Each structure stands twice: as structure tokens, then as C-alpha cells.
Image (tube, rainbow, N blue to C red; front, side, top):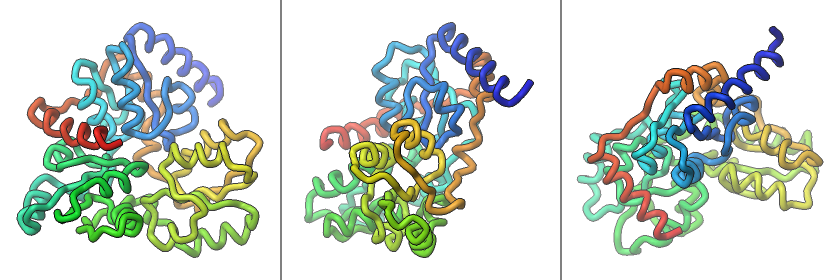
Amino acid sequence: MSTEDKIRYLSEEIKRLKKERRAVILSHVYQRPEVQEIADFVGDSLGLSQQAAKTDAEVIVFCGVHFMAESAAILSPDKIVLLPEIKAGCPMADMVTVEALQEKKKEIPGVIVVCYVNTSAAVKAESDVCCTSANAVKIVSSLPEDRPVLFIPDENLGQYVARRTGRRIHLWEGYCNTHDKLFAEDVLAAREAHPNALVLVHPECRPEVIDLADAVASTTGMIRFARESDAREFIVCTETGILHQFRKQCPDKEFYLASDKLICPNMKATTLEKVHRALVTLEPRVTVPPEIREKALRSLERMLAVT
């Protein structure tokens, strides 16, 4: 069986099993193209969990990484949440633990902890308010100016927010292993090769990369910008998986990855075979203990109240 035939066969089997299991399939935009194609919803991590919560599905298959499946479990406690590759984690999320956060909070009296969604459910539960890359500036801007702010765990995103808001922010020493590999010289080289292209940058990138951007946005924001822009060419400064959606939604435009280093192995760990197996076995499951879920949900609800 050829690779194309195998993809076609597995895709059809997944569609059949999805109906039998009353399942909804979510895919982050960084997933493999063939995984994105079998999903009911493709997008940013929290947005996907919110969409799944609105459905009458009994099972959520999250093609992403562990913290994303936890978010789905927080918002849909009555649904079975499956993560096809249970070892697909997020190194940045692992850079902050509950114990380390508790110690840091003791060092900063009265601190408000703003927690990026790229964190575990337990860390969300220990935080005051969550944020996404799209709304981080708005969330921090809404906080009392007489209270110190601790932004966790992404230092690059935190620096971007500090510059945009003018707030003094205590930053955690965390970063995205993929975005942090991109340097200004990579973007300058891409711009030299494609002088007519606009530069789209994710705010998890280094400050010197952000300084070269024509637009700074979340993955969904990047796609929207490219779709609405009159420009015909774009240099993309985020994970390679997004190129599938760019080319699908803007087939008349050209997209160039700023560097071939922009590949997240955790996002590529999910395959059609693993999605199929998850639907057959209803494993591996991701759950969040009730006491952690309740506290984490409050952090998410505080964010939603602002946005």
C-alpha cells in the first residue's frame, strides 16, 4: 500500500470511528497536514477546547500536546479526552512547576500571577488569571497598576507584553524550544531572499525577531492577517505546520518559512495511526483531578471575563 493509499484508508476509518464514538477531533495548526485534514476543528489550543465544549460530542480527540488536552478536560469534564500520543508534551510548560511557582510567589508580596495557556492544569490552578498569545497584552493591561505582575512561563512573550503595556513585569525564565531557535539573522536572510514579503512573527519569538516583524500575532491572527492583506508574499516566523493552513486558506499567495529549524517534534508526534488507535481503544485518556480543575477553571474564567 502506497503512502497516499494508507492516508486515504486511515482517514476513512477515522471518520467511521468518529461517528461510532460520537467524537470530535481537534488539531492544532502545528500538526502534520494529514492530521489537520481529518480534524473537525483546526486552530489555536484554547480556542479548540472552547469549540469542543460547545459540541454534543462524548469524546474529544486532541491532536496536540498534553497541556492542550488538559485544557479540554477542564472545559469539558463530562467528556472523555484522548491524546493520541500521550508523550507529546511541551518543554516550555515543563519549565514551571507548582512548587517553584509557590516559592516565587513568596518572594513577591501581593503578586498577580498571569499564566500563559501553555502550562499544566496544576500551574493554572496556582495562578490568578490565564492568557493566550492573542490576548496577553489585554489581560495584563486590565490588572491593577499598584500590584506587581509575574508572567509565566514564556519570557519572550512576557517581554513583548511588557513593551506593549509599559508595565514592569517579573518574568519567568522559560521559552519555547522551537521559537527560541529563530534569530534575527535568519529573518534578515529570508527577507533578502524574498524582498517583497511581509514578515509574520509569533510573540513567543525573541525580541530581536519581533523587532523585524510587519505583524506580530498568534497563529490564528497570522492566518487572518495573511487572508485579509493585499500582500502576495509572507515570511512565516512560527512552526512549520501552519504552512498547511496558509496555503489552504490563501492558495493565491506565497509563504516562506523563516528557517528550517522551526519544527516542533512534539507537535509532529501525532500520526493518523495513533488517532485511529485512540478511537479504537478510547486511550490514552487525559484527566484533571476535580480540585485542580476547579481552580484552573477560575483562572480561565477570569481571562474570559476580560476578553
